[in-house]
Image 1: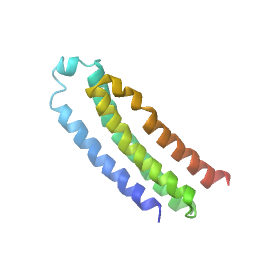
Image 2: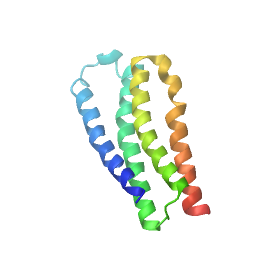
Image 3: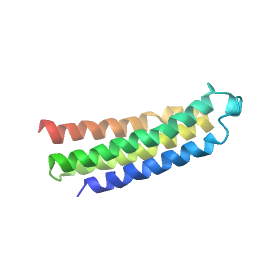
Image 4: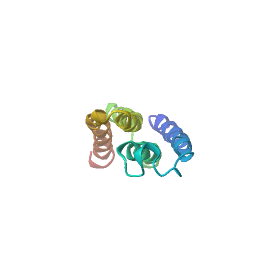
Length: 129
């Protein structure tokens, strides 16, 4: 079934979210760590950390939606599945890359396009066709 990779990706995202929060959590008490709470680097680390959880949940919701609604397998659904997983990988990666080098923030359209396309395809296949 197409949904299982997304279920696995979602739970892997949860684990990575906890790990991504635990490491910076060792230093959060230092007021000036990475330039202070409002610094670009620290904001991007927080965004990368939370994106693991948020996109993990969306992947789990995808898997449950496909299973509960019994959406039949199709090439479009396979694309939606793959794009959600790609977005869940690309978003935190781009966040961490942008934290490292601000000019890499210009890569944000890549994960956004993956995720938006995936959801549009799912809505089209699951609810509009």
